[in-house]
Image 1 (cartoon, rainbow, N blue to C red):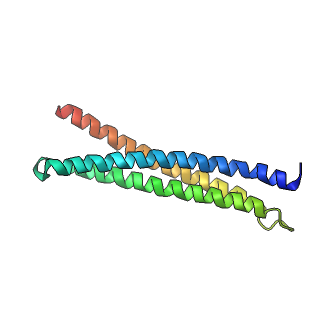
Image 2: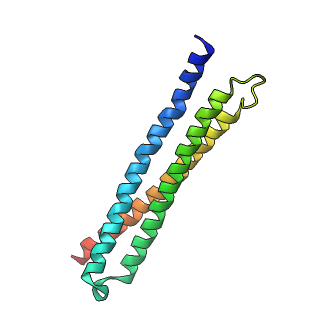
Image 3: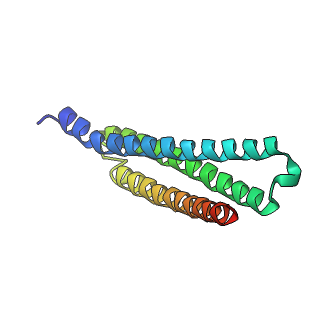
Length: 136
């Protein structure tokens, strides 16, 4: 296998991680859109019927989802840079020898942090559903 082929093969791992990040981004954006839709519906109902605690939960959910989207995009960017670092690693003297490893590892940590945000958002959503079911 030539050095070019080996480099391209090595760059596939960050590409797969970028794809995974895109999937997470899509999921988080759908969750954020549902929160926005729900808040818009509450606004249509009018302020007297809107529970301030419910609005606060939606605000927290939106902040968590927004934070997760930002983190997922950051992770994708880190994986892109890791792919570039793999390509640059071919340079004489290998100035970027450990950069791809550290960039990829940091990207994975960012994915975990974003996933924790989404998990917290899901817990708030479930709590809201339970409250609404009790209300009915």
